Image (cartoon, rainbow, N blue to C red):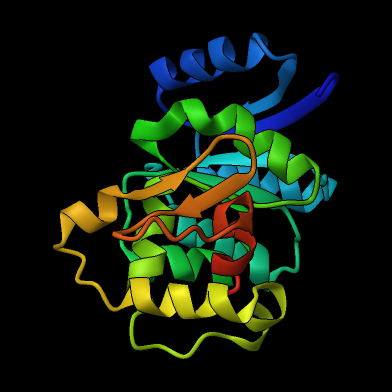
Length: 208
């Protein structure tokens, strides 16, 4: 996406260099860099800019949830991507509830290009491992109505079946595949396929 620029909130110099290297190859620029949450929040309140913002979830002054909470309270509707080492379902769901559009595990930092492009086109993006954790965390839960409207009955039944498996069943988890081209499927013992736009991202994003 030519001329696409983001705002980066990151205090690690090596990671800033890493972002520059990753994004320069795909014509995504970094418009502004903030090294702490306070300076970013002051700037965003003043400018009300609507850029995509990539935020380190472990800044010295604020974590990602605190920044999202502040933005939410101030009704600053930023398109935020959190880059984090936290992958618990409760933490991720909280971020989603506060308006987070993307959530990438730090070890999956190379996903940043795809995440930015998805969010720029109005979609969401979450690392594959996060999607697996969110699916498994829904076992025994009722699927939201918004989920029902997007998926077919067969898809819903399949998700419910999958969600009953224990997270410790690594053989099961490893069979979940999510591609890089907005097309996902889940393959288990009988190779049943679940097709969903962007690998359930839109569905998982509305879980609460």
